[in-house]
Each structure stands twice: as C-alpha cells, then as structure tokens.
Image (cartoon, rainbow, N blue to C red; front, side, top):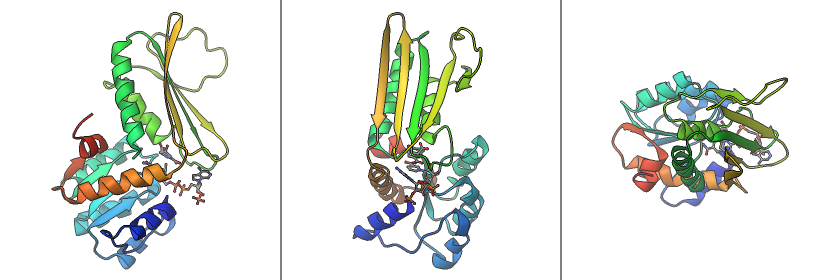
Length: 230
Ligand SMILES: NC(=O)C1=CN([C@@H]2O[C@H](COP(=O)(O)OP(=O)(O)OC[C@H]3O[C@@H](n4cnc5c(N)ncnc54)[C@H](OP(=O)(O)O)[C@@H]3O)[C@@H](O)[C@H]2O)C=CC1
Ligand SMILES: O=C(O)C1=N[C@H](C(=O)O)C[C@H](O)C1
C-alpha cells in the first residue's frame, strides 16, 4: 500500500510528499516530516503509539487504513479527533461502503436468517478477519448482541439461531473479496464485493484525505465524508 500511495501522491499536483515510513521505522516520521498537514497510515498496529504522539504534537490530520487494531486502539484514534481531523476505515473502496450499507439493510429486512461473512485475501496478509469483515459484522449486528463463531471445527452440532459465522480464506494474490450471506428457508441472498486491484483503496483514501484536510478537528467516518451519509 505504501508503494501505491506514494505513487498516487507524487502524481497528484495538489499534494506534495514529505516522506514515508513503515511499521519497522515509524520513528522516521519525526525526522523526514517534522511537520506536515496530513499523515496517511496504512501500516500495522505497532505504529499506532508513535503516530498518535506525532498527531498530538503537530495536530496533523490523520487518515488511517491500518487493520488488525483492537477496540482500545480504535478508541484511541477516535479520541485523537479532539486535536486533529482523523478518519479510520478498514476499507476505502466506494463499493465496499455500498456493500456495508446493503448488508445493514438486508440484515434488518431478514431477521432470523442465518448470516455468514466470508473474506478472502492474498497469502501475505497479516491479520484475520480482515478489517472490512469486522465492519461488515458491525453492519449486520449494529448492537453487537449476536454470538460470533470464527470458523467451525469438530462436532459443532446444529447452528444456533442468531449466530454469525466469520470465515477467513488466504491464498495467492487476491486483492480482497468479501461476501455477506443470508440463508433462509429454501432461499439465500449473497452480497459480494470483489476488489481486482489495490488501487481502489488508494483512490478512495486520497479522495477522503482531501476532504479530511478541509475539516475541523474531529473523528470522521468514510461514508459521511464521501457520501454525506449512507
Ligand atoms: N483500509 C483499507 O482500505 C486497506 C487497508 N489495508 C491495511 O493496510 C495495512 C498495510 O497493508 P499492506 O501494505 O498490504 O501490508 P503489509 O505491509 O503487511 O504488506 C503485506 C504484504 O502482502 C503483499 N501483498 C499485498 N497485496 C497483495 C496481493 N494482492 N497479492 C500478493 N501479495 C500482496 C505485499 O506485497 P508488496 O510489498 O509487493 O506490495 C506485502 O509484502 C494493513 O493493515 C492492511 O490490512 C490494506 C489495503 C486497504
Ligand atoms: O490487507 C489487505 O490487503 C486488505 N486489507 C483491508 C482489510 O483488512 O479489510 C482492506 C482490503 O480488503 C485489503
């Protein structure tokens, strides 16, 4: 993602690149970019503390796409909105924003249907389930009331009513496929988003970053920033 983001920023006449870092050398953020308007972070959870301290010190806007963050990490990002404009999303594709909306609508319209979320990614992805799958879980169960099973193994018996299944597939060079499946009596509804290139995440992130730069300090979500609301 760093390589693609660098290319996108360099190709955009309205932006200029101060420097880059990854999770192994995040402290370089201070030396290569003592002060910038915006930090775009697609790295790893290990970078969070350093990036958080940088934003608190400089008040730079922060767009984060890093996944594998804990609930506590996400709360820290939310709190950073007190000092700077901040956005986090597990997926910056416009299509996935619509998928989340459709999944929310379908779940509300199909109470009692068995729900399974399946994600597939390339064989070098670090975290599971994907950040997008976790956002889809929130879309189908906004109150967080339902039990979640991560894969199934052994004599699991009949499926408990209300359970949500989460499944992570890994292989090859898959840029990211997400499916939300609803099973009823003698019928099923399957919502699928398929990324055929990582460029979609880069394009969405750059577009969101430009809108973020025009905002006051606060924590923003992708849907509100890009669509007003969904
Ligand atoms: N919010 C969002 O929209 C998105 C978030 N992310 C998140 O951003 C962070 C950084 O991502 P990333 O830079 O990928 O992670 P890493 O720095 O962990 O790198 C992942 C590795 O996987 C490789 N890789 C990535 N995509 C593919 C693919 N389609 N096929 C084969 N190999 C692949 C990369 O190869 P190479 O070095 O050659 O690129 C790299 O070696 C992670 O937390 C990730 O989940 C990632 C994409 C979108
Ligand atoms: O690591 C990836 O590749 C991706 N990560 C994000 C996620 O965890 O959902 C977004 C996208 O699916 C690609």
